[in-house]
Image (tube, rainbow, N blue to C red):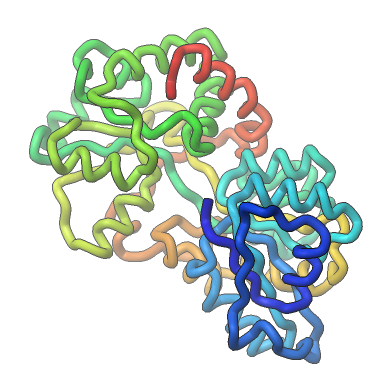
Length: 354
């Protein structure tokens, strides 16, 4: 589990008294832990998005508006459980997660409040937000197909793989790498396939994937990409930004992206998004922060920090991401994908995807 960072002495005290766990060490950031409340008040954000990806934006917002942004970081599961435990006493005003499934679950548990907002409606496409306006997408990640350019030319690979279902065919026996089924990204992908094909057809596809595995599933997409480079497998399914980050760090690597199902439903996309908590103490401040995060200039930076696509179509991705192209995206609402995650998890467990 990621270490938890608390940026406010007030937040630290509340959480230690109310619901800290013995196995979760607490730490404070020395230069801000004892800072007095800002003139514009403060907004407390529970974020499963890594702190280094939002730190600069939060600091800028605090400096320019006078509203201090305090962040509590952890994985989505513990943060959602914390919100449930704290109830009306929670200090959190906003929840940020890195998957629509987590946002759907938080909303289903009554932890996120409806927010009808003309700015957010204009900035975030309908398929990237909750139909009940309880959460909004802020960045888009595509779960796509990556392959070895040492093993395949783009032309050859494109002729053999049109979509996700093709990787279930016998030609890919011993050539496919996957991440663990325990990760929410794969649950969301399988949920999207269920929405597209129905459960029986999806089970047939996923069983084919498991039969074609070159090795045991990996714990991360980064390890999977490294396995492709090493020749351990020749193809895998990953979030596009893992390759984007690898290129940003290392330069060119012998891996390319194949956008699946471009003649049909399109590539499965998911979001990093945010919702207003039901018991927000600074509702107005939280809404203003969320509106600011959805604006084109900020969206470009929010997405660039992780090599994602901005949710706001007026914002541009990085040069690396633009180099991947602009794929046809599955139009299914990410809220529907979140709702089908329990069904997807049962399917994956049933067929033995570990």
